[in-house]
Length: 259
Image 1 (spheres, helix red, strand yellow):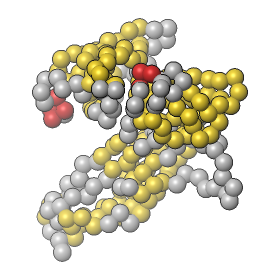
Image 2 (cartoon, rainbow, N blue to C red; image 1 turned 120 degrees about the vertical axis):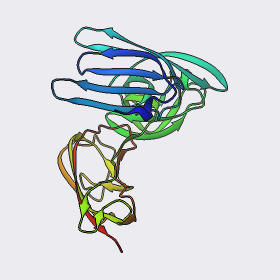
Image 3 (cartoon, rainbow, N blue to C red; image 1 turned 90 degrees about the horizontal axis):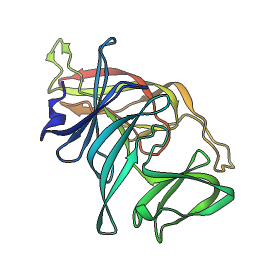
């Protein structure tokens, strides 16, 4: 059903049964693939996890107290040297090779990052995005004092829709000018999203803005006037910050013109 994703072959596989049935596969080039599989509901959803700075060599699903945990061996290049790390997938930490740490009082200096020496990392502090920093001497200094931090390598969540194929009075939509005039996206507990490089605004700010925990948004957001394109109708929804992103559905208003 997604044969383009497995080109080159699969070298390892694991099944994470709980809390969600997911088959994890390691491609020969080190890209991690997943298949969300639910036979009863006819769900077979493929995804490629290729946006992080590392090569996956093997995976294993290990039973834990109330779910199955996915563990993997990841090969990374750190300060010019090859390193292999045993990493655990945590859906609540939206960073790779991350550490979670706390301080007794608000702090700007965070240590214990020698495994990411020289790398640019993102920081989520007190549940808000704090910024990006480069690890030096195993530590970073944030511009804002925080009491808890998640620090790791960033990646981008990206959903890209196929071009619509409909029959019109002029024949197939393929090859004609296409326009998505409006997108309605339904989100669940999400902080921030970008549609075709246009940010969706879930909340407004006053004149005095401070770093604070952003509120999670559940509901419908709309964006209009995405423009005409010839033969394609690109629609990309992404989250480029290490913050919650749950896209439930997308509805688009679509137009075709042979001019």
